[in-house]
Image (cartoon, rainbow, N blue to C red):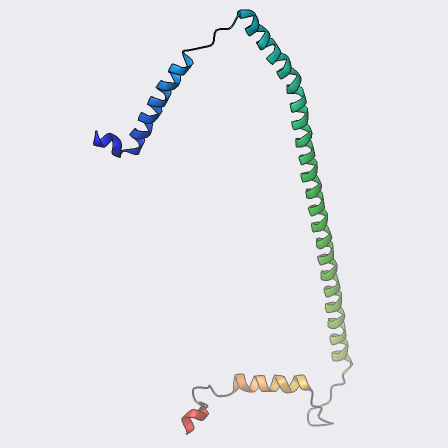
Length: 157
């Protein structure tokens, strides 16, 4: 007996069996109606159901069609936005490519226009980019950091 009460599945099945048993007793006492009134009620239910059925079906169809139109419209708007953003990105890419090609052309033109002077002759011009390149190369080609360590100020004291 304890096993039945401790197991929830068996307990639920037992409750369901008892409740269905009582429902069957209620169904055994049908109300007696005259055959004519029963037929009239059934016909009235059929006619009302038949007339209401197409109206509800039409209403459901109209609602589904409206929902489909809204979804389709939203899809078109998103597609249009995506196409517009794609065109804008392509235009930006073209502009950047044009700018890069003009910069490359000007760089090649400046290199070609500069007269080459023999080394040691003429004036020496300092350019900012050549100074930066020189500092970088000196760091790269210089002695390794392990051979020339820089002590911090805290260690010196």
